[in-house]
Length: 114
Image 1 (cartoon, one colour):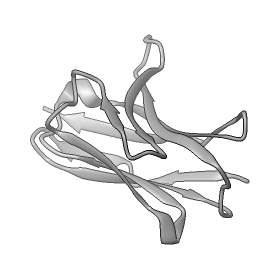
Image 2 (cartoon, rainbow, N blue to C red; image 1 turned 90 degrees about the vertical axis):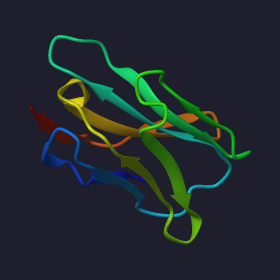
Image 3 (cartoon, rainbow, N blue to C red; image 1 turned 90 degrees about the horizontal axis):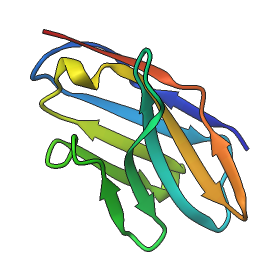
Image 4 (spheres, rainbow, N blue to C red; image 1 turned 120 degrees about the vertical axis):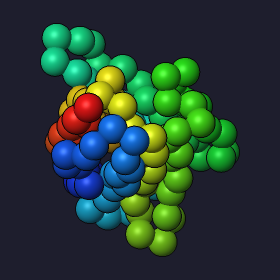
């Protein structure tokens, strides 16, 4: 199984982007899927997580602006990002945890200009 992240790009502050993370095949027994980001010189941090139960967790810095959701029919998890700021600039990675395994996507660059 592979994860393919897409949707990154350059956007002005205040704008929106939607990231997508598509699985190459259906992932059985998913525990949770998540988006992380890593800015230059910083550690990778959790942005949003969606558990199989439907529970969602967001980093404080994105609450009220970002939404994580999943399309089960497409085996795709999305991250809708609104009211972007330059501090959101980073490489965004998706992650799937299932059957005691962890799978990472390749990352997609998000750049927010002021």
